[in-house]
Each structure stands twice: as structure tokens, then as C-alpha cells.
Length: 121
Picture 1 (cartoon, rainbow, N blue to C red):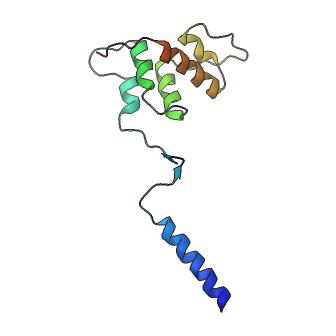
Picture 2: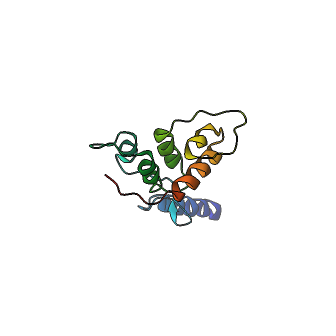
């Protein structure tokens, strides 16, 4: 009888924790990150006056670092063209040649952060 009560108590408390309104967290960030609506479209197809590549790369910096969304943003600006053994990147356009996503993201981040802040149109 005690075993049945112990199992019931564990299952009841587990179901109570599962029904919280707060999303599961990893550290101080939610486990699943939802990008704002229109975030990718604003970079891929700017409305009105066309933006420079530098401004679009800086716009990608506003997305949380280390996420697939930021890499997708960069890839929308400069489509990837991976090579088996790319040379060291001398400019932001060379980042597209990296096959590994982490390397490509780090490369784009480095160049995008080094661009002086430009006014948005």
C-alpha cells in the first residue's frame, strides 16, 4: 500500500510541474527560442529602399548569438557555397565557403561586429 501511495505522489507531483505556464529554461534562457514574426523577412527582403549588405549583416547581430536563426539570417544575406578546404577568410564574403556551421557563424559574427555602426535606411 505504501508503494502505491509513493508512486501516486511522484506521478502527481511530476504532472503538477509539467503544467506550469513558464517554458522550460536552460540557465536564464528558454529551452526553445521563438523568433519574432517577420525577423527573417526583414533581412531577406527589405521593404522600401534596399539596404546595404553591411546593414543587413548588422541586423543579423540582433538575433541571439549561437542560434540557427542568426546563421539563417547571414545565409539569407550571403548564400553559403561550402568548399572542402577553404582558405582563411579575408572578408565577410569568404565566410560562405566554410562547410561547418559553427565556423561560418563565427566568421560572420567576427566581420559583422567589426563593421562600424551604419545608419539604417
